[in-house]
Amino acid sequence: ATFDNINGDGTGFDVSDQGTNARSVAFNNDGTKMFVVDKAHEEINVYTLTTGFDLSTATFNDINGDGTGFDVSGQEANPQGIAFNNDGTKMFVVGTTGQDVNQYTLSTGFDLTSTVTFVDSFDVSGQETGPWDVEFNNDGTKMFVTGTSGVDVNQYTLSTGFDLTSTVTFVDSFDISGQEESAWDVEFNNDGTKMFVTGMSGETAIHEYTLSTGFDLTSTVTFVVTFDVSGQDNRPRGMAFNNDGTKMFVVGFSGEDVNVYTLSTGFDLTSTVTFVDSFDVSNEDDGPVDIAFNNTGSKMFVVGLNDEEINSYSLSCGFKITNSG
Image (cartoon, rainbow, N blue to C red; front, side):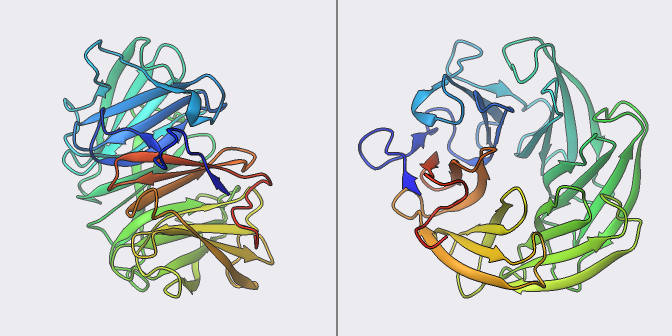
């Protein structure tokens, strides 16, 4: 991977003018819109990219004409995570103060300058008082919430996909206390039959579980293995996979790098998992908290907490961030 030296001075795409505590990043489907959750200013900052996933073409969308983003403070004072439905006409923001998932509708998909309407908040405090991450299954009929206070992954069903005004039912909490004391990030494989969790307490591992029915924590969920990453980073925060799960990427506080692993069988940490290499991001930011790729793996994005920027990297070969792999 090659660092995209956008400004010519070794820095990434600076978001400090808009916010000082970036938490997570999301893109629309073609990468022409980027959304950054700013915890400090309680807003979602939006950037338009004239070339998809190319931060050198990014421009801040001054939605209100005063240099601010989309204000969510009326619903959440500490936003942490963001998700969209498939066409971007619904946005979901989760945070640790309101202890809920907030839903907004957008009259134009992925466009926060269109008519954006707050719809409803779904309270998750009965299950999680420090919600940090929200994920959906492919059709939005299942929602998963993790956080810093619970020792579980919480599942909810929605009678209408991606609609928190429909009948939303808490289904079950899947206990991960045998592996972790606090869930930080959750990821699924493509069909939801594999779940991967990183935590804040064990802090040295990725935990894998199998689900007999995809995206269903009420089916037979089996803890499979804990994959230790302490040799590379003892404070892992974000993780991502390539499309077929044969590569895993882990970013963390301690190593200040992106660690690459190959899996001989996709999304299977019991197969031969080999640490390949670490890609140092400390020159750009020494507090990486989240990682994302574009669809083809030709661009990698790392959220830097300390330097208040989104750093992008170009990959000449998809999902290949070092010469080794």
